[in-house]
Image 1: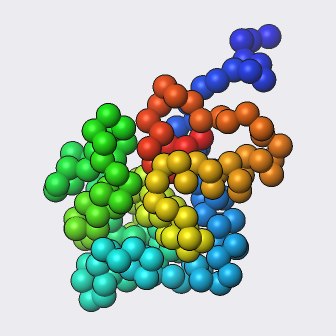
Image 2: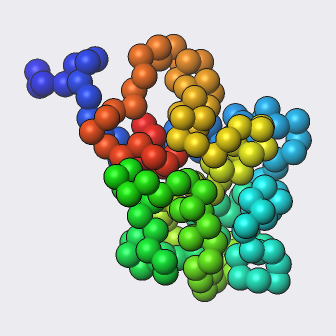
Amino acid sequence: RGWINVNTEYNIASSSKLVCAITVYRLMARSSGRLTPESLVSDFLDFWPRSPAPGGDVRLKHLLAFTTGFKMFHIDELDPPTECFNSQLGLSWEQCLRNMAINPFPAAPGTEFFYNSFHLIAAAAMAQVAVGKPLTTEAWLESVRDEVFRPSGIEEDPVYASFNEDLPSFTP
């Protein structure tokens, strides 16, 4: 009855956002109250704009709800272009976030929903910093393993090599 079995591998695309959000919430619980839904991005990422600059009032709750006011969807819309999802270009996770931070936030945080991956990239960065982990792909993947996969009994690493794995929203 079909070709899918327990060993079938396939890309989960945007379903990975759920895994990312669960990891962020679990790291928040481990942060000893340092990270809360009300936390400002600028309190964790020193290069992020501070209020009253656009984007300066963005909080973790806005990132997780896709309501930051940041509305870019395609990486070629950013200036400078942010090839965050292309591991061949060597753009670091931090540089991707820096490029996001200097781009427009046309709506006030909490006022408009706009679905894209950049929100969870910033949320994951906040969580990593809150628990003292570096902003690297390896450290993030270890957080995902520790907080989601191992507690779920998943011992084999489900990260697949055929997809860009550099940022949290693309971690299955």
